Length: 562
Image (cartoon, rainbow, N blue to C red; front, side, top):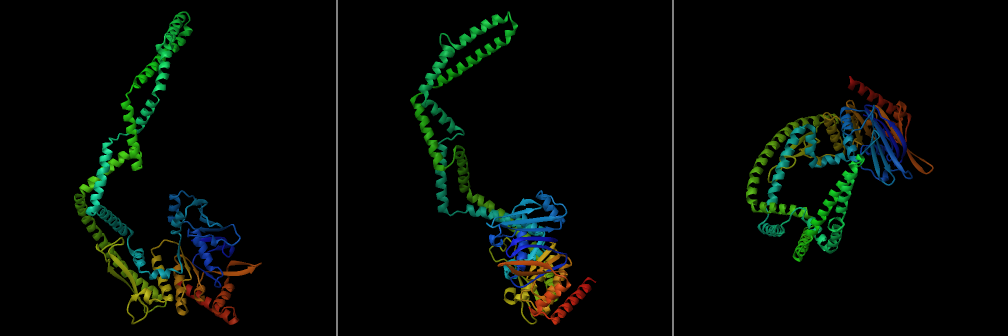
């Protein structure tokens, strides 16, 4: 349940703190006073898209904070996202004057995607465009599934359809026309021949480049090595000989002074190190004896490797991978017919599985449709549509397979609002007021299987008046017995049914517009309902009429509870 809402610098609302209650919460006020801004603020804190136009002129930023009761699903979300909450769930949305926004849940920054996921567990907002969505027949199947079709059954079909599409796409990829297949075969064959002829070897490029750099500097390198070898080993007085002599003298001295044993060891180690270094230099010197042919071969090899790297836009390992992939693709083309035959057998199997799963899904939809038809008619009769007929029409999917991502059914809602009329499309038959009542009926029916604790109706009364408006108010009250309901309305029949009533009023001070949100007591409610009846012309008679209406609603509530 939504408990508290804090709004700061949202459009004409400079600051407002609203304490909502269980049951039916109603918001009334003049057109343009800011009723929908309250709903927009709730949408913003729940992750709806926002823009800088929402920020009050002259303010650096806007802030909306909302606190909700915790429930099992919300606590599971918090655990999954490593967010700690104490006694309540606190959401906050900040919107900068530049349009940038940030979201927090219990003080922890979250993405808009996370916030939307959480909001789906908290609030269901029925906006003014939901009636238009009801006329979109593409949505009717999802409405029916939401009402009474097993999620496991839908997921099983979706998985089967995914496998079917994957196999079909593989077949389509292999079924190239003959000219395209021949062009691709020639291209791959040429590439394979070129790369195989190069005899590529992992690590060869670096080795070749290093050897070539060595040979390019061989003259200077040879001179330096020869000088080093002479000083270390080959000269008349070289470092190795001198170190050996030093070791002999040190050994002789150590026979008289044992403290010199470590020094003798160090000198002998140095002799071995110098000898190893000399041998390494000598080996490298011998490797520098090369022919001009080797240098030319290395240059040619490096040029070839560089050419292939530039041509195919990959490094040496990428060339080897490209060769392997080209061989595989060529093999697929050469054996495409055989692979296609194998895949076609697999496709037949997946198609049979899809048909079976689609048939199971369709059977459950038809069972659910019978219940939905009955429940919608019951709800609409409660909403002053006594002669209404409502039907769910099924037609098969019209394509080659006879099924698509949604199954094998096309679903369309049909209705007849008046006795003696044929069933027809909702978009052709229903008036604005009837659309509002149908959506309310569907919301009420769906709410029976919905765990979302709060429902918001933004001007559900569009096109409704008289007795129908009274029935809508009574239906909203009945829904509010199981959930918290908030409703923006212009109708006194609905306002009179409220458990908690807020007045949204606009005023001007020093050239600026300000909107206030005020909870009304019994007297305030009577005055506001009188205004809804008669506008500015509030008299003792209209007040008395409003009081009478409030008393009648209280009597209805007592009977309902009984």
